[in-house]
Image (cartoon, rainbow, N blue to C red; front, side, top):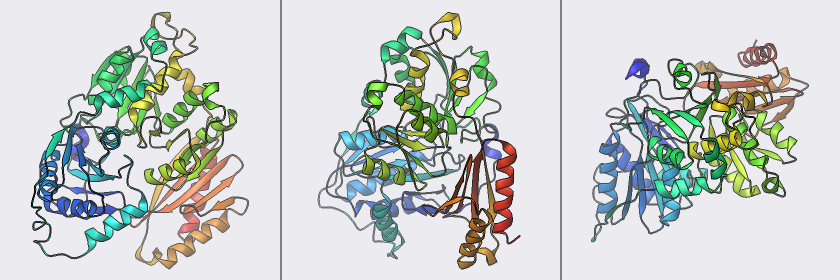
Length: 478
């Protein structure tokens, strides 16, 4: 289990318009999960509901309870078993299901699990639809309400493996033969989550030599599952030992991807989207006349700079995958995503997808290569591609809020922050975002905790530290 078991946990059921999560056996029980799913199913049109799960040991218990409730209610269930979150989205769409449920707590530690909801479009549930589910879940009901929803005719359970369809869709987005000619050696940490189910056959299809660690989807995490530099410190040296050209890290439900160089230098999650955007826009015929790029307002400015280099607009959305997808659909985006390593390619699925991110980055390494890979093969090193990205420094922090700095007092404090940056351009799209020449800062109150998150990015660390310090001082009334 490594250090994943030593991380402190807080047993609070976190419920939002896109899903819920909590500690299994504590705040999250099969009964709570069934009540949430009942509220979700009540909003859906007729049709089957897809269920998938990551590798956590609590997944089968929750999946069985949910499937039993749905079939007793007359719903057919399509069971994907252990599957990545984007794979569930693909199955929902291809099976023309009414909706879908992914059982996963994403990057949270092993004691947690959760539910993520999908619309019939195969995307994370939009906020308006999620609000209806949330209201239904919070509406008081008697203990027998969900148990009593028994149909005269029970539904059926059918198993579907969405992996082959997912691989085919990803392969259509890249030059497979170019990757096969270079035979990149890939080191991958699937983190004992669902990622290996698609990653292994996909990378083999692309002609890669593959070294996979954490490939057994058993939920026995070797490290805290969020793929950050601190959490991966013990894993990074293994990339060089494996003589790999690149290192990839997935989170447990495989919708996010972090990247490291052949020497084990962590490039990070923020670079994933920027590299994917560069890979797509570098194909001139594809970029011409294409739609814009969409990122959320807490994503690194690297992506916007790259888009501008190619003459493509870059639009911002509020934070949250559903908000990014809403904006992508509204403007016909060619690609979108978030700075947490989540790349959304509408040619594959309207869900963050670590697999399409891998394929796009590998293609970029293998097209027009410089021969800098192993054995002189025509590969551009990932180190070189990373160095070609716009260079900037991003830092993130959070401030605990005292009881007297919440509600209207917090709104007043946010106004103080805006006044503290008189030369900046302000946006209230999501919290407060301030932009100035060469940098920006975002201040957002958490929806689930009494904290404020502050993110800043600029050309150097000194400017970032100064911006965060000034914002924090204004927030606290200094």
